[in-house]
Image (cartoon, rainbow, N blue to C red):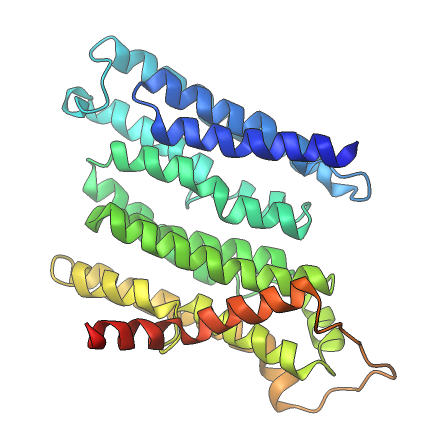
Length: 342
C-alpha cells in the first residue's frame, strides 16, 4: 500500500513540473509549482528518519514563501499582460523580485541557506530528486524572465563562490553535494544566458553523474566521510568508480563533466572574460575538496577491516553503476570521436 502512495506522489511530482514547463499562462506555471511542492513533501517524510519531519516543514515554508512572492509578481504582471512573450512590459523592480523568488526556490546563492540544511534530513533518493528534478521548473521560469544581466552575473559569482567555499569544511556527503549543486547552479545560469539548448546538455550530464554517485552511496548506505573511507577500503573497484565520478562532477578533463563547462567557457569568454576566469577558479576549489575526500584512501594506508563487503555483480544496481560510470568517464572521449567522425 505504501508503494502505491509513493508511486502516486511521484507521478504527481513529475506532472507538476511538466505543467510548469508546458504552461502558456503565468497562473498555470504557478499551479504546476504548487502541485510539484505538495507532491514532494509526502515523499520527503520518512518514518525511520527523525530529521525528515523538520526538513519537510523547512522545505514547505521556504517554497511557500517563494511561491507567494511569485504569485504576487504574477498578479502585478497580469494587470499589464497575460502572455509570457510580452515580458518587456515588466518593471525592473518587479522582475528582480520575481527572479529572487525563483532563485530562492532553486537554492542559488545568496538564497541558499535552506538547501544544505534540508538535504541533510533526506535519504539519498529524495536528495537526488532535490538535486536534479526540482531544478527543472525554476530554471525554465528563469529563462522566461532573464532580462537583468547584471543581477544574474552577481548571482553567478555568488553561487560559484559560496558553492566552492562552503563545501571545504563539511564532513557530510549530502552537504558536500548540496554545495557542489550550488556551484553548478551558477554554471547552469550562465549556460541559460548563452543558450537554452546548452542548459539542457549541462543538466542532462549533471543528472547522469549525480545518479551514478548517489547510486553508489545509497547502495552502501554512506552519509559521512569516515564511512566512505572505512566501507570502501576493500572495495577498490567501487572506490575508483566513486573517485572518477567525483572528478567528472568537478569538471576535470577528459571526463564527461568537462564537456558542458568547455562549451560555456568557449562562449562566455568572448563576452565576459573576467566572469569566466572567476568561475574556473572556483571550480578548482570544488575539485580540491573532491580530491581531499579520496586522498587518504588512495595514497595512504588505512586500517583494514576484518571483513570483506561482498557485492553481487549480477545485481541491477551494480550494472547501473557500471554503465553510468562508463558514460561519465568516457563520455568526453566518445563525443570527441563522434565529432571527428562526422
